View 1 (tube, rainbow, N blue to C red):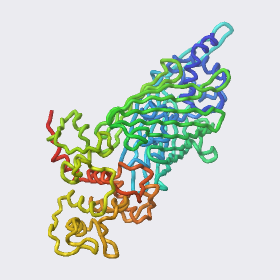
View 2 (spheres, rainbow, N blue to C red; view 1 turned 30 degrees about the vertical axis):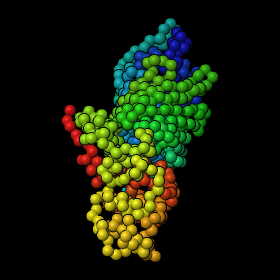
View 3 (cartoon, rainbow, N blue to C red; view 1 turned 90 degrees about the vertical axis):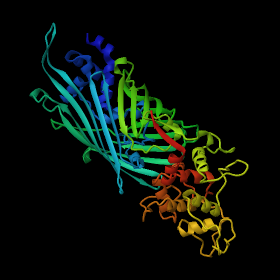
Length: 591
């Protein structure tokens, strides 16, 4: 009879073993037979995995366990991507998958998740991260619980097996994370987790004595923004050896090591403003992770794709490989995942479907709500789609357009807005020449027009040795020098004809925007701009203010010529420009 039941329910037992213990030292068919026969007698199929845990707690079997709830995966978004998140890790879910990613989150961020597994196991997680001047700190919590587990006694005779239920108990398992993260070398970051485990039963009778316990361990992670749209990550989970506290201790005093795992991940933004290519407002993300263990468990892969159809809605899918017990030992199964995401007003709403094995009842559904604390960029299209307001252009047909600025050009909106407002001009042939470098004289004129500064059109004396009173740029140069936005050179020249470099332009524009410039820097603002660079403090201030969002995370290219399109992009993100755009080009009417 037991053999028949085993063949019918082995997949569910395998799932239970993998789900709760995740990294067992040895799983053999004989273990499965012992566990399954007892479990089927003592509990309903919904409770099999808890009964297995109960038996292990009593040392009925001799193999070691490690109940790391983080192996289930946390956050509906990572789960729907097949748990491929180590190289990406850009929200509070990084606490559980790669703590180094917390260093890239500029503001307070939260994520929570709830779900049901095996129709009866409640799974809950919560994470919060917050940056400080020193480093980013985070806290995470995961809990899995079920109730009403039957407690039985088994009496055998030569003719029958008698099962008597004498009570019931509840089971819960929890895991707390205390996280930190800090950037270094400009485009890299590292982080870590101190972890506290607990699991046990509500019954305190002698029959379950020693059935509860606690443990501690440590995770470490690294993240590298290699180049535009390409990131890599590395995590080592449960690093501490038993001699240094990395263990789980049962009430009986029995100690077990928690096997370490290592994950190497990559993330490629194929489409997007910061990706390899740009196509409208769409983002296409590909994540791939390799997971390895320090024991006999085989290595597995995780892969996922995320497609943001627009800035609000995303579709996701992936494959999550997991070890499974087989007749020959330990094998691998491919679990399909899928999900959707929604972002609105700084909040995220995510759903994930995760297959566990081939049995339909094993599939789980997870829901997450997160707070991204992101200030949505000013975007006419998104405003037109708002559920609360219908926002329309005051005179849509009168927006200034140029022959050489296509609808797919990355800076088309700021160019149109600033040109319509008269802040920046095109050329007589109705072109804008967005990739044309700016000269120092042209930048001076642009700053004056942007804020509407008063100028003395009849300059009575030469401003610089190379800017006489009749020079076309003389009134503009005089105005920006008086405001201390720009200055001349030590040789008494201004060089109005000189092409301005990106670092020089950002220094000028940081002053122009009235940004607070830090006295010192603890890290490089970009991989190619060291913290002791003459312009580093201004570049860091502009980056933190969101003026440089169009640039790659890792590279700044300080000596590159500063273009007209870049000037339009940066100025459009300044507070005074945003106010003018909203006031003069858009109006709100309540629907």
